[in-house]
Length: 243
Length: 334
Image 1 (cartoon, rainbow over the protein chains, first blue to last red):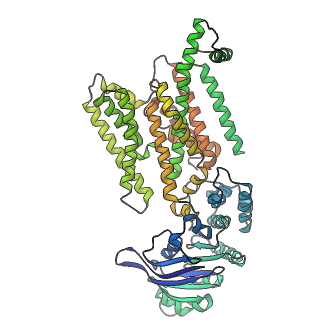
Image 2: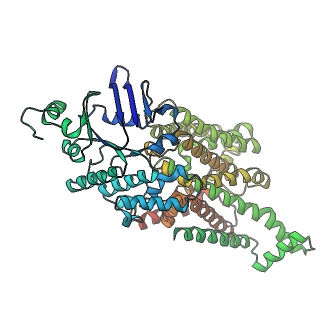
Image 3: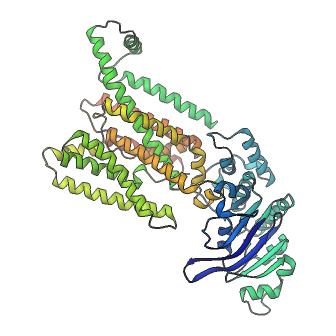
C-alpha cells in the first residue's frame, strides 16, 4: 500500500505544484490520474518513485517512509515504466528485460533463473518471439510492452506509468490498455496518468482528477469520469464533449 | 554466439602478442623464442648474439608489448565506459578534461621543473585535477547533471588547453618546445620498466573492474531516472565508474603521453563486432584496444627505422577504421 500524507511540493519557491495531497493507494487496483498539462500529475508520480526530494508531507510504502528505504528496497516494490523513449544503444530485447534483474543478481553474469524470469515476463506481454530483436527497431507499442516486461521481471507490485499510451496509434492504445487490464487481474497494480477520459473508463478501477495541484475528485472511474467533471477539469464549454 | 566472438577476440589477441614478440628490428623465429625462454629460466650459457637477442626481448620488446597492451586496453575500455555513462557514443576518454590536464602537467614538468620525473607525476596529477575541476563545476547545478558534467568537462578541458598553449609560448624553442610537442604526440620510446612495474598492477585492476561493470553500465546507459527505478544507486555508481575510467586514462598518459582516437574508435568497432551489450562490449573493447595498439606499434617499429610518435599513427589508422565501421553500420552507431 502506498500512503501519501499532506504532501506539498514546489520546484521553485512560491510556485507550488502540489498542495496538501493525501491519498491511499492499496495494492491490486488500477488508478488513472487525469488532469490538464502542468497540474502536477508527473510530479506526483516522480515523488512516489523517490526521484524528487519531499520537503513537506510524507510518502509511505507499506507503512515505511520512502526516505528511509534504500533505492533497492524501494524499487523492489515499485517499478517505473517510462514514457515512450528511444534510448541510445540498440540492446537486444532480452537484454533490456534482464536489466530489471540487475540488483537481484550482483555478479558478472545473470543466473539461469534470471533468464527464465525475463523470458516468462516477455511471455506475459506476448512478446516472447521478439526476445532477440534489437530494441530500437521495435515500434512504439512493442517498446512499451518490453518495458512492462522489464518491470515484471523486476518483480514489482506497483507499476507506475507516465502517459503509457502517448505516441501509440489508436489500435495499439487499446491493445496496451487490455494488457494492463489482464495483468492487473494477476495481482499487479498500476498507477498511471492519461489524457483520455475514455481510457480511464475502459480500464475501470479508480480515477483521480487533479487540477492545479489539488485532487478534485477521487473514486471508481465510472462515477468520477463524468461529462460534468471532465468539463470542469479542462474548462471546456458546455456541450463540447459527451462521455 | 556473442560469447564465442569474445573468446575469438581473446585468441586473436594472444596470437598477436606472439607475432609482435617475434617482429621488430631483431626478427626472431618461433624456435629462437622457445630457446630464449628456456635459457631465461634455466640460466644456460648463451652465445653473444643470443645474449643480445635475449636482452632486446626482456628489456625492450616485452616491456613495450606490455605497455602497448595496457594503454590500448585502458583507453578503449574507459572510452566504452564513458560512452555508456554519458549516453553518447561520440564521447571519448578525454571528455572530462583528463588529457588536457595531463598535457598541461607535462608541460609544466618540462618547461618549469625541467625534470623527467616531475613531468610524469605532474601529468598524472593534473589529469586527475582537471576531471576534479569539471566535477566541481557540475556540482553547482543539481538538475540534468549529465549535461552539466559535459559542460564542466568542456570548461576544464579548454582551460587547461589554454594553459598548455601559454606554456608552449614561453618554452625555450630550441629544447623545451620540441620536447613538449613530442610528448604531446605520444610515444612508446619512453616506456621504462620501473614505471611499468608501478602502474601495471593498478591499471590491470582498473581494467578488470571496468570490465566487470557490464550489467550496471547497461542500466546506467538508459538514463538516470530509469536506472534509479531499477534500484541502482545512480550517483555513487556512475561516479565510481567515471572515476575508474579517468584514473585509467591518466595512467595511460603516464606511460605513453597523449594517444588520441583509440578510446573513441575501438568501442565503436567492437560494438559492431559483438553488439552493444556492455557485458560483452567492455571486455571486447579491452582486448580489441590491446590488439589494435600492439599491431600499430609493431608496424611502426618494424617499418620505420626512426622512433616515430605512436599517437600520430593511431590516429592515421583509427580514423579510416572509424569511417569504415560507420559505413558498414549503415551510417549509424546503432
